[in-house]
Image (cartoon, rainbow, N blue to C red; front, side, top):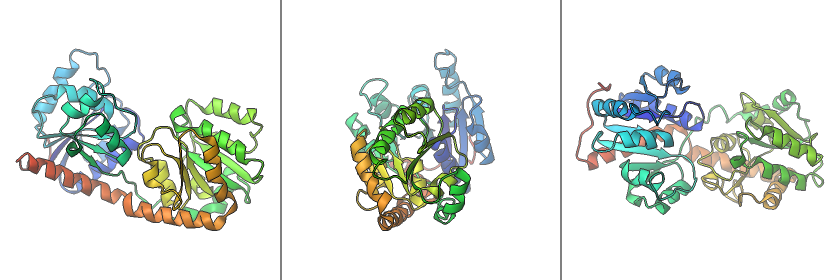
Length: 376
């Protein structure tokens, strides 16, 4: 099978981590990967390490008149079995360049639950520019159907991560707390996420303020950097909680944060299948999350944690409180969450499920997989 992946993003986050797993699987299975990137993309080194053929085009310069013919020429010459648009920008730009029969099957992966409009920049992309869309959770699949995408052209395949680094963290609690400066007897609520409005950390601070008096040992640790850092620090100070809310900026590696925690919280307004929630699940933490995106597919309310309405600080506080006073409940839900994550969200499942889908899509087109390992 010959695969051509187009990635227009230049950073490295959850989507790039999943693309790494995809390339690794198909390379190990003897299939050929070629990746088109924007110059300077951080993913380039990863792609090369995995044996992919890496090519560069100015994918983010959508206004350049020479971009589309150059991109189309590369796509046509590639004659790929699978043309994979690996991000929304790639679908919008390379999808237009690839219109017509330029590959045997064209696919994309939708990674976040933002509502999809029905116009040219919305549902049109998923109805006309690709043959099939992979949704990384059921909530995203529902967004696609609401935008007019035929259910037969949508497949839900969960993202996955390697559980090994996260499984032993509960045994490193004391050392992790010492390194982070967390008191040994604290009841620690943590959130590890980029500090942006859509992640909902302001709501979590408001929820913590509702808990603080009744739970004097409770602490809140918000790991991450981003545009909201200064505003969140000001919010904590305004509430008089600056001594109990830690905003250290980026923490790398993040393992100590999860090892030190009693409960993990993700109060996001929009989400895909949150990698941080998967990491917390493998770490055996009970989780209190909003109902955004796939959060409620990772966390089962009342069994592995709690799921509340996005933006509801009172509900968030009420859901967190039981874990601050009941170690047995926290252990029970954390262990159940770990078992669920091991069953559904491991990296070893992602590649085979995608390969099976691609094989079925090619068979439905009546074409055999190309024997070549690399694109021309």
